[in-house]
Image (cartoon, rainbow, N blue to C red):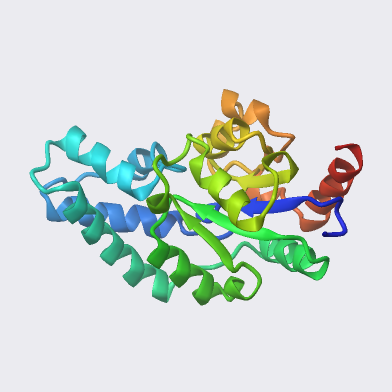
Length: 231
């Protein structure tokens, strides 16, 4: 049992642990350009923050009338993304400190992400976070992606933790909704600051409205300590 009252912590990956959204945008832009969609913008990309890669490309197929299969689009996007991720991806410094702080207290931790297992593994290895984060769940392994709770419930199962004893860290509204649906508390660190007032974030136990610029490992840890004492 951890020193935080038996709490387990489940991290989203993209936009939460690591600053990977620019790479996902560029991978998406390159993919769509290959299929004759040349004007995919960052604003377009923001609509998919927190949505699994598979569900994203399925929506593209419908939205842009693409003839390629979802499987083909997924493979092309993942190829572009992995090429970018191997060269340039960074963990948010305070998130790294938070992971290290929790690891030092033997808090069970997992990563639950909408990315593919290959992408998750590449990023964790590239940033060195794989040393502390060994339990990994991809939305590809469960029936439904976020905002359904499946990926978080599977992470809790693999950790041997009760959902009510889990705290999720999320940057996107669909992830906050998924945490709530799973019966888990949530520390929300919005990637898109303008979305901080989204109703999904209102369910978070701790909302860091200023995003990563405002998040600190110590404040998050102190909140977990208070949560462990009162639950």
